[in-house]
Image (cartoon, rainbow, N blue to C red):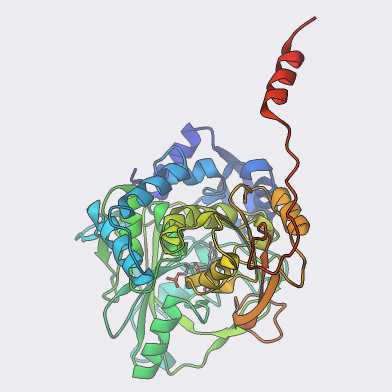
Length: 508
Ligand SMILES: Cc1cc2nc3c(=O)[nH]c(=O)nc-3n(C[C@H](O)[C@H](O)[C@H](O)COP(=O)(O)O)c2cc1C
């Protein structure tokens, strides 16, 4: 199902009893976080919240703030127009099973074909609601001689829509400022012209500049490096809102070169209508709520970004990142500002990341047919900890899976992998821990290796490099160095269970 705007999605959540409207004045500085954090910590992720009168420096913003809109399995499914996320994953899996691939490259090609099948290709249109209000700022000849437009300097007025007037959150007390937390960032590979959509948080430095926190291993960072090498100014477009599938697709670990708008179009069952920006030639969804256009100047030094209360549960400390210069802001008249907060889990991003795992499970299974299921428990804040169940048929198969996963896209960031047998429910952390501790001789059944790490990981001795640990918690079979008989797991007879059921259900 395609939503016309974020407001459209909010209305659907409201009708389904999934939204709480908050009419009181609530500050975008810390107060929204405190309310949203309490909601996100409720069992199952709580409700979505709409702050109808968010305040920015004490002034009511003309735009409401929506938060936790994707923070439950039900809302995640609703954003895809489905009853459950599993239903969508099964459909995508079935499409891809048409001709099982023999390699990762082939699997990715097949994914692209599968997405295409639904006529999911984005199409270009000439008009769209994201241009209801257009505020352009003269593009400077060079970044050094930026002449701020007169309106731009007003800053505190509610009109025009400068960054200072958007209800952008300051999430946590030690944050380095305000951050756009659900930004969809569009960039282009200068060599191939291929587009990328990624979600990289945006720190507001002032009315005309922001940070651009694309991490070392992300696709936009690779695009950026090419512009630096070519010495060319890099056009960038950030948009917020529109269909909820846009922020989801921006976070999905799609392979470099595969357009995330194809995935968004597939999931919303309607091609994404794209419209050209006002001040560069990138395209953004015509129904986005806000668009912030601009560029990165490769001659300009990097600038410290952060600190930021991150999804690791800790603050990430300042690190140098490119500076983004704004040339235009456009928006819908009835725009809603969607946001999220990250922090000590569980948070909204658990469901966003979890939905990605469900959708991409068929691809994992195609490369590793022995995989039954994969879970990234909330405590592992995305990729720190991965549980995977397999149908083991030959010795050391668990290690093959560990190495395979560490070599697949963003699974490279995983610090700990625990492999269990097919009958273990990986979504039940207690069950996995029971099998981990019961079925392993730690030295024999573990492996250490090295690799790239998440740049947000504060525990590694050096940024972006670290070690990984894998545990084989499967039942040991001949060839795995285990010389004794493996005992059976304690289980009651089915007949006894049935008899006891009937005894307990019989009234005397
Ligand atoms: C709420 C949220 C915020 C995120 N912020 C960042 C960020 O600031 N920088 C970053 O590199 N990745 C961030 N990510 C993860 C990326 O969006 C994710 O790795 C995505 O697949 C990157 O796209 P790419 O592979 O096209 O670069 C965030 C994810 C979520 C859910």
